[in-house]
Structures are given as structure tokens and as C-alpha cells.
Image (cartoon, rainbow, N blue to C red; front, side, top):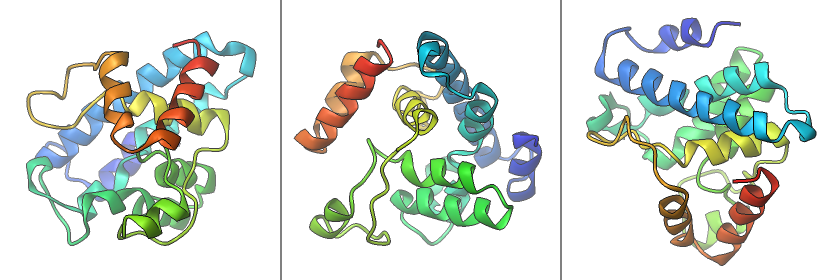
Length: 181
């Protein structure tokens, strides 16, 4: 399976949204592979990591994110579960779960209810080592203009996650420890 070929089914190559998505996804995929190398003792599937990292944000085109060249009708936070639906239609069930579970440090059903998030009420937490690696790698890169090619420091990432509560921070810190970051 060629992730960039699948991306081209939903994005016009050369469009702003395509270029941002592919650049961001390549950065996340490379970071995820670097993390996987450090965590080789956990036996992560690096082929899957590359593919799923390339596809983790595939549904951003369905969101109302003009700065990314996306003019959909959904809020940005919905891109994870929307990506799951897209990839399940393509018979990519494992890749689909990465889409849904990579947002933040994962999102619990309780958080969805407590914060009134426009998401289906269910746990969307990374469970497999590959899902956790991609979730962590994603936090080091932004799709925002001016930040696209800049990797965040670990301290900066931790401060961002801290904003979403102690449970999210604790979970994320456990992953950093697990992966030797």
C-alpha cells in the first residue's frame, strides 16, 4: 500500500492542503521511525508505522481549517474519527485506529463528555506500541504556517500536553519514558 497514492485520492497534488499534509506526515513518519529504532526491544512494526504515520491526518480536508487549505464543515478535532471512517472504507482497519487515537495524548470518553467535544463518546486512546509511537511523534510537529518544518523540543511538547490535564500528561510522560525520550 502506497500512502501517498491514497492521499492523492482525497487531495489534489500540489494544492496547499496536500502539500501541508504530506510534509507534516513525512516529518511525523520519520520521527516515529526514529522512536521505533530506539524502542527496538518492543518490536514495533516499522512498515506499519511508516504507512500509518503518513495517513494519520488524512481527514483534515473534511475540517474547517482555512489556514491548512481545508474547507470542510467539521471542527479540526474531528479529523481523527473522520480519518478512521475513511480508512475503514478502504479496508485499513489498523491504520484507521491510528487516525482516531493520535489526537492529543489520546482522548477518553469521559473527557469528550466533560469538555463537550464534538466527537463520538468513546475512548480514543492509543493502545498498541505503534499507535503510541505515532501519537508521540505527531506532537513534535505543527502544521501551522511558519512552524511546518520546525521540530518542537521535548520540553515544549510536554508543556502543550500539560494544558490538557494531569491524566493526559501522566500518560504522555509514561510513553516518553517507555521510548527513551
